[in-house]
Image (tube, rainbow, N blue to C red):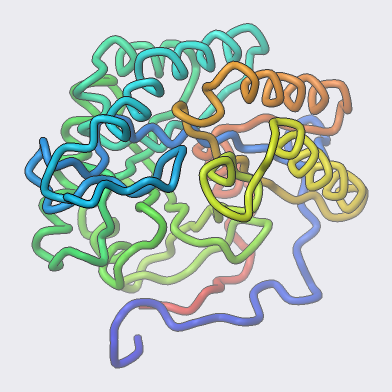
Length: 311
């Protein structure tokens, strides 16, 4: 623990001695598709926030931030009305399991989707009560929001989440609160490795399954970003292809970040479909939910070193 709180920094990780692991079926790389489902949980004047959501398809921000942004609201509505169902059909057709980073309020506002996630073979991972930064909350506020989010996710989907991913970054309290609440197998609030790793939190061993912003459709909405769907496909394909080569001796994992309002647009979905089909053609990819990765790591690699500092 440092003076500010939270984990100490670890610049070494596994270093040059990364564990020689095996994935199910001899796969060389575990590919984790992560659907960030946030539509209806974003910042909105209509929901009592002091400003509207700034992450969208265009950089336009209304001069009057005290007024509703109907343009931005519509972008998010597309994700929940059209994009998510296009993606659900794709996942069903290709038999691809996905982890939903689900904001609880977004699930409440789309009960048909909430009920469809688990029966379709996907996982629900906690992504906050709303799509807000934990760093803006007190410890007590974050504790209450976490507990309520878990409750709503269980109510709406029929599954209690065993994983957690915060908006962009956790607070210095987040991991301790996950341990305090109980029932969590892992969190993905880190971007610092290509393999899961153990760390110590409140004197308990806790698993981190790292995430990434690199292979992420969010770059359709940020500059510099993807100019066309093929950019997304090629970025992800190159990453997976290189990891397949490394996986001949040292298998790794890779995360692909998705958003229904972004990759759910038809042209972009076509690129995701091509990526899934290409991965399946290699014979070297294990498409896995994050809980599958966590369960595999816990069952087979509980003796790997504890990394990442402690708190």
